[in-house]
Amino acid sequence: MENFDFGIVGLGVMGRNLLLNMADHDFSVAGLDLDAEKAASLEKEADDKHTIKGTTSAETFVKLIKKPRAIMLLVPAGKPVDSVIDSLLPYLEDGDIVVDGGNSYFEDTNRRVKSLAKKNIHYFGMGISGGEKGARFGPSMMPGGDKDAYERLRPIFEAVAAKVGGEPCVTYLGRGSAGNYVKMVHNGIEYAIMQLIAETYDVLKRGFGFETAQIQQLFEEWNQSELQSYLLEITAVILKKEDPNTGKPLVDLISDTAKAKGTGKWTSQNAMEIQAPVPSIDLAVAMRDISKYKEERVEAASKLRWNDSTETVNNEEIKALFKDAFHFGMLTIFAQGMAQLSIASKEFDYGLNLEEVAKIWRGGCIIRAAVLEDFRKAYKNNPELPNLLLDEELSSQILPRQKAMRSVVKIGIGKGIPMSVYTATLSYFDAYRSESLPTNIIQAQRDYFGAHKYERIDKEGVFHTEWEN
Ligand code: 6PG
Image (tube, rainbow, N blue to C red):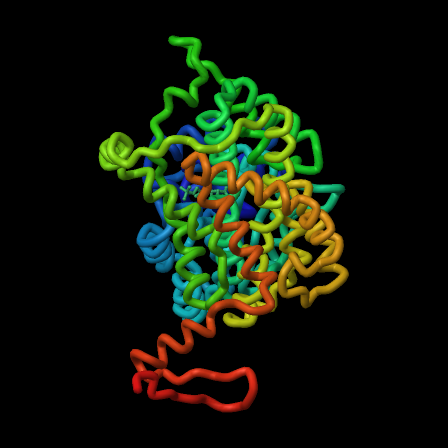
């Protein structure tokens, strides 16, 4: 039997759910997993009209799929991807397509594209966002690389992707590892917005004594406004959840040490590599890292004391300030991530169309938010826009909220409550809007201690000065 439309390797949460999503859309799909239980339990899911088959044998799996084959890998990034490719290779043939649907590092994708091309196998990376539910009922998908191969699979992907206004949240994004790169930056933005929400919660709770229920209500209200976004929505749901044993909000019982799989770190690392400043993402990564040092933090808490010196502000005023500051923060975080994409597109010759990126992020993915529609319009008006902050419509949303952002950051600083992403976001904004920066001093210092030379504003060329008399 060689007639399955599609194959998925890795029947974990994402693989299994995406497979069932495809089956719902009348595609026949074979699944491969080394775990026999996962393979067997998959078949039980099939109802009469769907064709689903699970197997633990790479050979059986490949032979089940009609030629030229379309196979998607949904396995953890790194070595597992290489070993799955190795296990499939003996059975793959000319023209087969392998899609990596995981959070693979973009450089790994570049390497795999090259090595599989030598064997006439089309390989491309496609970031998929939306978690378990997204995979099952409509994710946002970010394919890049081999365009012809993508075109062949387009009908399947468009059928299973999330839809916004009837438009599927999947489109071809660009050359090479563009798909993985866009997903990586998606996750970087995800880290920063999650941290922005967490910091809001922290200041309201620790700084102003808000009850969890009050913060919950606030987030729910914000989510009904122009701030509507998946991350706010789920945080409101999270804050409502009670621990069945104690009746306390469950979040109050969850430890404050966060884990990370690494995509946020990669975003920051590569941003530094290509000199795309994304301080909000850098700080979001740093805050997860600092959360790990629990013991030291406990010790420091008793030694490094600070007595709150800020004046009290009434609750209604505080809520209004935070709403505006959060709005400012969200837009300015996106501005950094999108600017990184614009720089990376040139650096890696991806040929990204940022309007399309904004379009497919409007639904299905973790960072979906109402503001994405505005970003889409901004890039439609000017596809070469280097930074969303320069778009007139967006700057008209940001500027009136500047004062609130400054007040909120001042409050956090006064109270000694870390607001790393708020602060970094405001600093980014202030640096970006500074016609002149103190980097002249940096140039002079480098020249002083290392004879690195400097440039001047009044004449062309490079100069060195003997700074000591
Ligand atoms: C998504 C998520 C998804 C996953 C991250 C979590 O878009 O669906 O981003 O990719 O949940 O891997 O990342 P961390 O473990 O690094 O927080």
